[in-house]
Length: 81
Image (tube, rainbow, N blue to C red):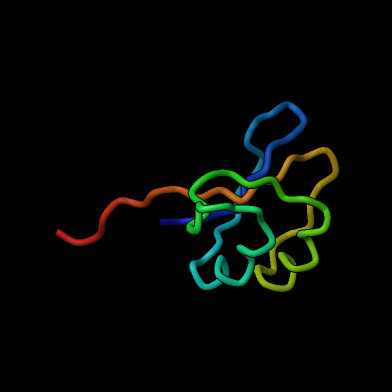
């Protein structure tokens, strides 16, 4: 699994991404109402109340007004032969 912050501009085009490590995910996942999706494999909207913790844990760039931000989980290909 991999995770990243993704954001979309006012035109709904992808405007940027920021990688989130497994260790970081464990520190921020309780910010989100993930139900039984313990690995946050879907997209979760970033709310204003999330930013203080995201800045502290991720050292991510500040949000740009007008952009929509999400925590996005994705499958990674298996490693090794």
